[in-house]
Image 1 (cartoon, rainbow, N blue to C red):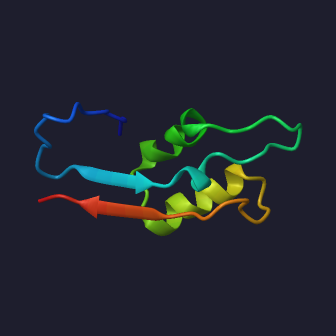
Image 2 (cartoon, rainbow, N blue to C red; image 1 turned 30 degrees about the vertical axis):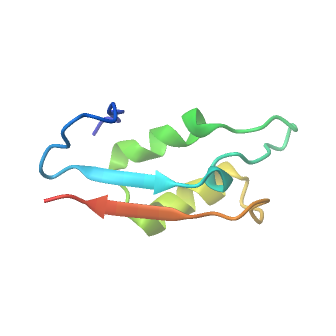
Length: 79
């Protein structure tokens, strides 16, 4: 799998999976005090995770501690 970012006017191919996540899922603190970013969560998308698996990956990115912010994860499989 690969991550493809589309422009607003792009066609989405059949069979695509669309991920919508709030910034609380990836803007978390590392143990060394630096902040994670979206680029740190993107590798988890290579496995085409479902919503639960993506949330688990986000928790792991946060070091397994409670999220600092609200978190929303939505996964849509397009026909």
